[in-house]
Length: 113
Length: 113
Image (cartoon, rainbow over all chains, first blue to last red; front, side, top):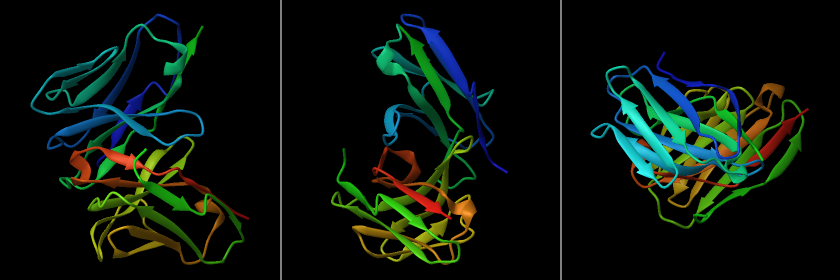
């Protein structure tokens, strides 16, 4: 069925390094791709999103890129800080149903001081 | 955080008993969602609502039912709880279905013994 694959499942970086998380989706009709951050014991919160009419979007140290041809999108975090440590989820609309998001399985990012 | 509350926040129950989880919002958002979160599976959509008395199934709807009699309340019922339904349940709300920000509630940790 339609799904969203996310890699890697865990990522450890040194403070100040960059981190990249990649997701692929199966539905070519998908047109909205959000990223959520979930700190330990907290609720998921939207950090950035991108729509299919643009290829890249930036917000300070966070950026998302989208390759519609290859059906993948990536989250880039530069100059990582310990407070970036969390689980990150990508998501996409699949199956032509614009009311539903399908989430990836998550990436646990650990930023080592 | 958006005005979303979930009750109860924690519940322990026995196999075969009925369980109802409540999501309450004060934001007057049209869309409401129920997800479950399990290690290795990310966030999986159970059911969602696109208006009062309007609901639809998600990825993992078997064993769950929902009701929405008022804009502000969305109930999730496990008719006969099983151990496989032990999970953290998140409610979310949104203005524009899957193509816009979803705001998550604080979560309910359910344990079925």
